[in-house]
Length: 281
Image (tube, rainbow, N blue to C red; front, side):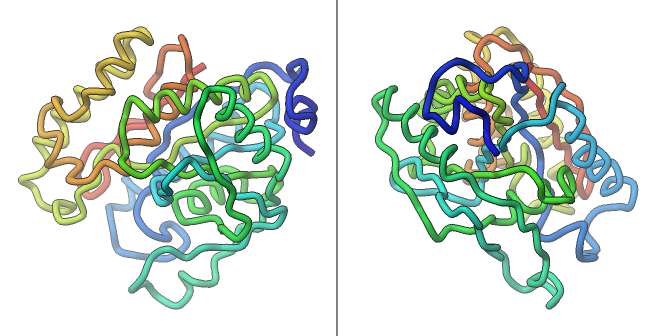
């Protein structure tokens, strides 16, 4: 069941305490459920341990998860509405077992309706998708965090165009969900240049960008949101993100965070390239 405020489409916050907001790095493809030979054992172990530990981050168990994955873009913010979302294996070229992974978490049509109501109240158009399944930006990390698949989960798309300020505003519109027992999770990567993974020449740019991102994301909200809106001015921004879809879920998380200042509970590497994760609240 979802929080009373969600199920009713509004009303008083559920007495469950305010939920945190997270931006996490989801790694590559179907790891760690399939051996991809990507990253050192120490790197992969550290990332896996971090993702598994997210279950204990909320002070009370969430009533539902709202997942914003880098792997779904639509003309307007779009929510999955299925009560039983299927799997969406949105990768190719991996071993056959990559396409048998399951994570049968229930959906939440009530939460999807609430998301649309909040976006509408903020003057934003939105849409529904009744057939959308969990993509790997969602099911890979959440299978580690909630292996029992026992938390209702809804995905929300990014909006095509990937405007950072617009996605901060989307997150801001959705922030009341935190008081309704909904755990908002952005899933992407702070480094995402597939051609550069494994290239030693990319390490210095990755370090510079990640240091900039850690600095601005841990600033007070007004300065943070202004800097994130201008992320292309960061050192090596376009080398690190030739296309920014893996960074934009952080903007949604920052918007939902409101005045909460970020912490950096994960700062590791994958194939030698720096990655970070952020918690708010």
